[in-house]
Length: 173
Image (tube, rainbow, N blue to C red):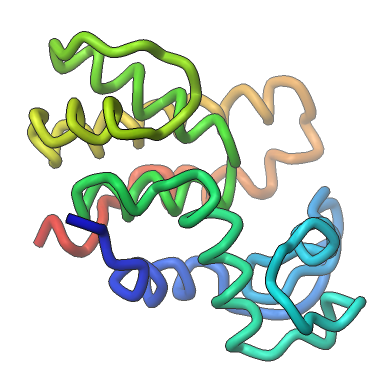
């Protein structure tokens, strides 16, 4: 069963909404979480060259392609897919490693290779989704602390990052 991106997107949009550049943010100018780098590497047809000119539909399409389709997040159970998809937007490929390490911690035998495929999806389906999402959230929180430990200028983002890292998907109810 394919997880539904349209259930993730409103939650993701609540976290990422807004246009502009925040002083000190390494991502530069963003539109609802999409950076210029995302636009430059996107496979979505018909995009403007400048992130500032994206429409809402283009933003949604880029996020779907970059952080849902390409990494095959849709293979996962819905709640887990939502948490992993959100982590992909912030921390990219680390999300797959956190997922697989969390699956191992739940007692499932799985290779930690950073690739979400049928084996990862099957193992995720054997886990309690709440516990799996909570473990992924813990890894995300630790990553926030690592970033600030390495670069004190990023501390101003820490509270927001930790809040987001700790959020559990709405489909967990």
